[in-house]
Image 1 (cartoon, rainbow, N blue to C red):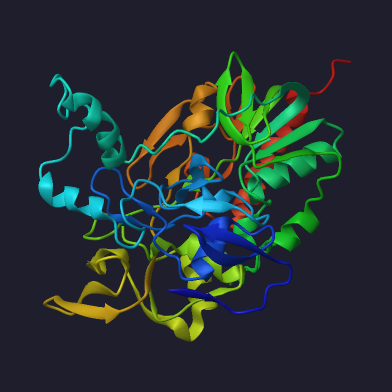
Image 2: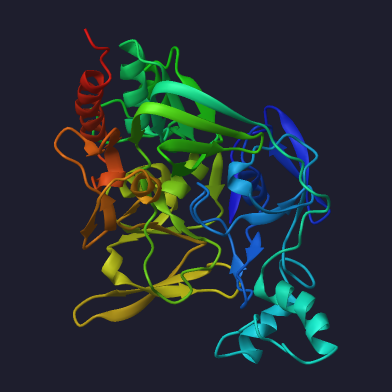
Length: 428
């Protein structure tokens, strides 16, 4: 489905179910696996359908695997260091031939693993461990996890999200003398825009350009930290190394949006991914091994179309999608065209979707922000014209329901910063 287009500069080796896989040091494990044509990385709960990465930003279950004895690791968010032992979870057999796939036929009405054989002496204990595997709950770590350190951090402003809007807010606040912490769950800032070729040059649109235009001197960057919640006004940022409890006079949410998905047959097969995720793979030096169908409009659709070039088999509007063909990965896409509409089969190794994203409002709501329901996107953070969402809370960018328009995102960041500077100015 994918292959590398360039030689590895700093190669290391990881293992997937005992098989060696070459990787670039620092790249996500999921990218290394995809580059070696390991597209079936997981199995769905209960029905054990094949799963593959669809978002590459830690927001789907397609890349979950057991890594070095620890279950349910997001391999798209774990950098390759070399020597990692990656194991497919919840399978009997192999990741490509899981015998537990038969549960889809044995339990056509669904599987209630909570009550399977419950109350039957002797059988309930045996079924408990078996049902856990069938249900896709994983196995406990090989060894008890060691306690991780925690620390407190007091700052003027805490920004959640390391995309263009979050970086712009952090840069401007730091340049105006505020102490700033930037919390980002990814491996790098503005990583989606690495290698961007945007056709609307109204604003810096490549990651390097954005970071050069918005220097982060003095900003405490908490990369690979997840904003896990807000408790009594304090933001908890968690990572593999430990936790940071942030106490800030201003908290800014630039959390973006979750990639959109549509309901159609086989929409969960490996090879169905967001247009944004496809752009990230292409920027990582991977290319599809065959034609790709692109569905949708917007910034990421344009980016994907430009980067794919001749590998783009067809671009269609979202309503034209009928389904995907394949047993373990995408082999073709069904679309409707013509008047009267007729079904057409387009051979493809991948389907890239540019569907409306769902604003990532969850942690902002915990911080006290109100929400507004948008018919095409779901709930979004409600703000006033200054970007204020609650007392001491601001929100900018896609989490407010705004489209991914770089010039508009940067302008919303500027407006919010002006208000935050007023709110955090020391009394005369």
